[in-house]
Image (cartoon, rainbow, N blue to C red):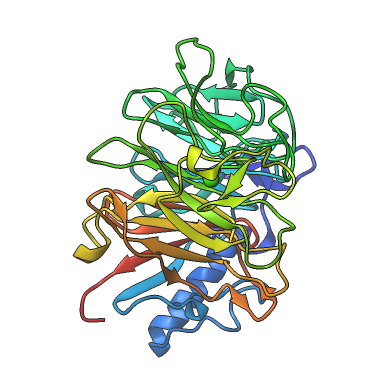
Length: 401
Ligand SMILES: [Ca+2]
């Protein structure tokens, strides 16, 4: 663990931020210390509840329901507004945020736990991707690159701008990004509205970008607001979630899981939603059969965000090759839904199930957390970011438990 330094004001700091009294005393971030106490208590009493140890506004791991054999624990409790995650060198996870304006590195190497702020005061820097030692961050109109980012997490490099060719709209301007099997960086651009005709050529699309200096190229059209996608491991096909429009009632339209099978395919927005639902305001006389229907209809207003194919070996056979989806949860519905992680089984290129996997963040009308992304670690465990509680959870599996 790195030595603490002192600011001119005399406050102990680490990585540029003040240490709390707990942190100074325990030599670790305050929430981590609390988790360590709670875990010690758990081991002592052998039960599954952390009640009384963690801040009451957050979900306790014991509140989260999972299929038999799965366990959940707090991986990092001190990541305010945590959104997309990207695996870095083993033991490091990079995390973006929205309103917080920060990008983090969670460093769990060598038995330590540190959260570094790599950048702050960025414009909704929710999207992060890691390749060849560099961290890429999507901050609305700009794609930034932090070269050799893990060399010294205490003194991160200044970023360079890979592209500033994206629209600057704040509405649906935050992003999820990832490298495709073709080496291009995939960058979605949401509709800058609830429902409208795309005002520019890049709105309501998913693009790909040559980071060596290309212009954004549109690969999918008619996408309202995708903030989660992944590439099917065998086929390389792009699958993505899309958030349905608001103000059409509690039960429509559905959110969508989509599959891109050819470049330039149109997924319906703003003319049609889900499977054949004409938009009452923006249909413009178009037949919904003109557009690509979803691979799977998801719940209405669940706010399906980050999604990943399960490529690990830790979880049982039925999960392998399927998709985990972080459902951030509804706001435009009289009875809230979502606030959970769901699983979609994929067989022969078809999405054949849609089921809850981890739930319990929603209790009645009150939510203790909002899943924003999921990430498969190299050991096969699954991370879940929660931007409401500012946490990352880790889900593991052990047969017979
Ligand atoms: Ca659609």
